[in-house]
Image (cartoon, rainbow, N blue to C red; front, side):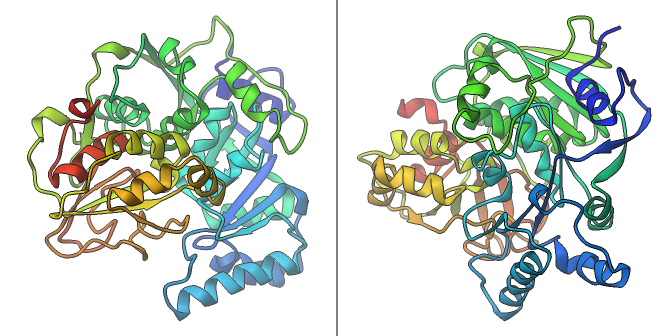
Amino acid sequence: MGLTLSEKILARKCGLNTVKPRDIVIAKVDCAMMTDILGPRVQIGDAMKRLGASVWDPERVVLIADHYTPAANEKQAEIVAYTRNWASEYGVSRYYEGQGACHQLLAEKGFDLPGSLIVGTDSHTCTSGALGAFGTGIGSTEMLGVLVTGEIWLKVPETVGIRWDGRLSPGVMAKDVILRVIKDLGHAGATYMALEFSGSAIRHMPVDERLCISNMAVEAGAKAGLIPPDEITLEYLESRAAQPYTALAPDPDAHYARTLTYGAAGLVPQAACPHEVDRVKDIPQLEGLDIDQVFLGSCTGGRMSDLTAAAAILKGRRVSPRCRLLVTPASQEVWIQALKAGVLETLADAGALIQAPTCGACAGLHSGVVGKGERCVSTTNRNFIGRMGSVQSEVYLTSPATAAATALEGRIADPRKYL
């Protein structure tokens, strides 16, 4: 019997010809990523000093200060300073501060490589799967072991095959695709499993959209969310890859624990309602609900294609006076690209507040916290109670197109009417 993509990657990283679900394996890590919020300052820094240990390979460690940048208070500034100093002390030259969300930077800087094993101290490290890598989030204690040894133990996950065929209709985006999948699987329906996406609808998507899909695999409990690499993947990596790589593909006779099949043409815009990511409804069911804030950004919905989709709807129009629109590009690279393309100007002319590339608003840390009794439509990945601010606020997760239409009306709106 053949192997799924995740099984094939893990077998290769263990030096084995084959593995099967539920095997416990020791795998070699290609890239270890830490952030400021769950990086060196959480157990790792002090523990490495007690152990008298060094980093196994500083060139394979990426450290990104994104949650607390730009710092909103003294405590955040101290955490970022600690992170920066730790990188210098341990010879980690791949340190990025204030340049954007960690998962976006891993892709942009060429660390997300097909066939690689990537671990990170952030649950959405599964984003790396969009480029054919096995990316997964781990805790700080596990990261300590990785930093010292370059290895990690894993249980080989079962794989759920998810196929989308056909073409998405105008106004329907990758965010709608993954929200529909999460609705069907449930927020724990794929716990410690890998999701593997395929089908013509996926193959037609640019890397930007694929990153959104893999990013939210963990919202169904998944360990990883992989898209087999193809010519679009290879073209994206042509000028980015940080090192040589070997692209892998699932075997034709691979076994899947479960398979879900969808027709893309029938999908309508979706929204995850408070306070669970799997409480998903069709946008027409929610139209007219008053909204106080619209947030367009993050590692889920702040890429160039996202900003462009919103700008196409907002061009020549004005944001409703009844709500505010905050825009946070996923990275500095996206920020500059959108600036040069006139996308930021279009968004600003419509009344948007353009912000620095940061995780602040998504995690309720700064730069757009939602107040008591307020409702927010967001292109981010979680809508848990208090996620973006007050525990008495509500967050609805939508695509960038739906977010833009909502900003125009000050209430949840179907983007298709503006296209």
